[in-house]
Image (tube, rainbow, N blue to C red; front, side, top):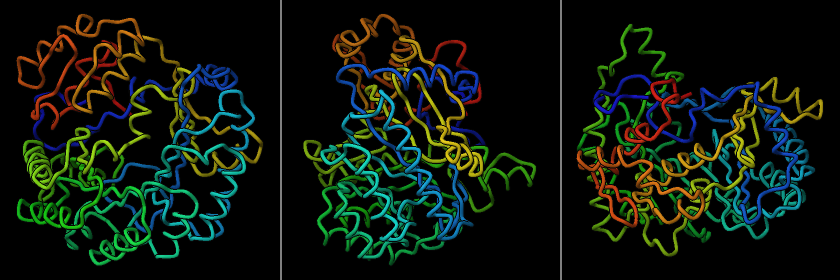
Length: 440
């Protein structure tokens, strides 16, 4: 993990998505994973389904996910059949079978890469295997250039409640240099169709600090965002993980610092997000997390996010996908060939796992919930029988002295300064053996 003093945007992971770090997940722990899957779920624990759709028209130069740009229609069908096999195997297990799904999330890659017919076929078969008719949320990630009206009609008919459009930036030159496939006109066209079809929630993603970004461009992106009035806006700060096109190019150049085209340092990216939050607040939006502003907190929910951050079970399907079941982290194998081969044999394609004890589960929920900007001490007392303000008094005190948060008898609230850099603060709460290690 980066040190708190880091200000340049160098190579490495910044965003904290889970705990303990992924580098501690090992194949040796798979027996514990299978034992958890064969166990009855804990009462009142919500269950979610994540589907990784790994196809893209182009690979973004900052992307570190398992995606493929060289697959044809037959490959898509083969992969869809494999996911159905995987879900069928899960549906027979006590940890999943018969449990209603609280949320479903189609992520990628580019789920909208699939045709309308492929999407209808996949979703219809999923609904035959799992109880998700009454799911509180069905989220579908989209790349604007892959959308047509009839495809959006299919998603609406199949029960998608929340669209997340990966816009990232409105400037064609910045989009092209960073490897994005869509054009600005495709943003407005797809957004217009989605509005006409009445999707309950439309989120748009932006990235502060893409290579070539400037203050003038960023102000224009925020102006255009406010003008189209999405229900929510999610803003990530650009990072350069090790296994991306950009990081490989930097290695070839023999450096770990930004390109001549320019990538902002962390203070600049934080300033851009701060500006965006202020402008969105003036337009009636409210802070939902360190990354997200919403139009109406009472109506605009993030069921997937909030369920995961409060300890829900989730089984992840598809190549390299992650899940968490009954206190055990799991991840699928990360190659196309091995994923298909294991399912052809009737085996769940798990690749590595990590059983998580109660103190680690507490830390996991605490650091993830910090991303909302606040912690309720009573929640952790009730769930973990732990007084977090005493257990973590030292890091809370240090961060309060630095102006990152305030502590009250009821809990913790991040300042705006803390909210804008929350990921770099989280390692302060890691157990000693998990600090200073490679995150992935």
